[in-house]
Amino acid sequence: MADIQRRAGRLAVSFVALAALSACGGGGSSGGSGGGLVSVAPTPTASPTPAPISTQDAVRLAKQATFGPTPEVVNRIVTLGINGWIDEQFAATGSRYDDIATSTGVAQNFCTNSADTACNRKYFSREPVAMRFYADAMVAPDQLRQRVAFALSQILVASETEVNETNGIAAYNQILLSGAFGNYRDVLMNVTLSSFMGDYLDMADSNRTAPSENYAREMLQLFSMGPDQLNMDGTRKLDATGAAIPTYTTDDIKGVAKALTGWTYPRLNGGAITDSNVRDYSKPMIEISARYDTSAKTFLGTTVPAGASQSDSVKAAVDAAFNNASTAPYVSKALIQQLVTSNPSAAYVGRVAAKFADNGSGVRGDMKAVVRAILTDSEARGAPRTGTSDGKVKEPILLMTSLMRAVGMTTDGYAFVTQDSGLAEPVFRSPSVFNFYPPDYPLPGNTSLKSGPSKLMTTSNITRFHNFVYNWTVTGDQTRSEFTTNPGIPGWVGSKTEWGAWEAMGTDTDAIIARIDLLLLANTMNDAQKTALKAAAAAITNTDVNLQARRRAQMLLYIVGTSPLFLVDR
Image (cartoon, rainbow, N blue to C red):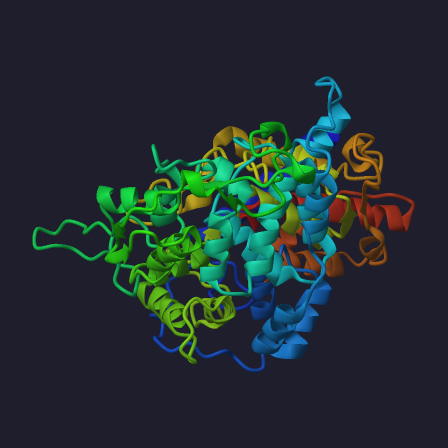
């Protein structure tokens, strides 16, 4: 094993060196077959969709709008075209969390023994929901809905770090999944009244005598308008001194906080409101009129008259945030950064924000219009872009799913849950309301570019990722312990990696390389890199042709899967 690892390391280093050479502008062009990163022509202001779509562009779209390209997805995009595939995805179903919310909600106080690990994992952890997340990411057909919901989960953050109720985690993420193609105003309203969010940011049980300002502040700062007034293109508005202009004041936060008083958790099985042991996190919060501030409230240019109902006060607060002029560019840019690029141009943000403000039929916040605008824009479409500000670093969750969708895997999700914490991105367990990383985290070594996921790419974490890729490719056979059935959660079936398609290529190393080039690199591998991979493959021999093909594919997947060309989506 040590000899195999050393050989893999040497081969990986040689390919990474070639990738680095390519990244510096050598060994390829900016066209479809090259891997070089060279300057490109200025981005046009129009946003046409190429027709017919190229295979390269189809792979690029799959990187942006799914949890990783597969041959089937790429072929479907080529067949339907960009808009046709998006239309099909808007109608697709398959992923869900509401059944978990319902099945675990009845057992709020079921685990009477704190040492009952299996029970606590099932009812008081993210594990069942995270397993479903990864299982659906691998094979569920509604890939775009899942990717948008995942993006929303990193904007409207609520985390297991503060609230470990499985039914609440499931119910909250069902809100995002259901709202991914709905209206952002409805998403914001449902999040506001979510019992899980109510616990996470303290709106639940906020009393008129001492209103909690936590949710009010984050709703404005992170979930809607952002801290600074923005132009429609996402650039900050400045005052006469050149300083940013705040979107809200301390008094605005206080006013919103008062408007959000008087809500609490529903209780399981008709339990008493005073019984904190039977909170039902699977349902929205309910009113307690005695705790509601009935006085007049003023915030963000809105006045709620004295005596207004609780529901009217919440609607006024949500509408004020949703309709704020900065919300369209703030949310649009955040979604672009999650799906396409960490450094979108102002023009790109402006085009998407215009669709958020008006979908063309007078509707504000139409998520379908926003998502389509993001994915069909000229900066999102065409061959992989090679400008210095283009693309985004893959975050660990997408690194895992992209690799294994390319390899071919079916899973109950447990194997991924055993890995994501070690890679610093345990899904649904963000360390704070600011997500796993801020979107404006600076690209290391650059004073102007942003790269949020780079915050997670520490030296130790990169080493862990290399080990992960090695373990699930070079040694990724069915004997791995995390692939076997999870004994703690009844009904789960483990993971299975499908190597049959790779074995079927036999001695055709060029076919193996071509498949890897397509799915991992969008056909950007250059001749020198292909030659390096062929040499690596030739060093692996076995009298069993199928096993030899598998071993060669595993080694080449490890080499490419840990290269900078795969770690950055362009």
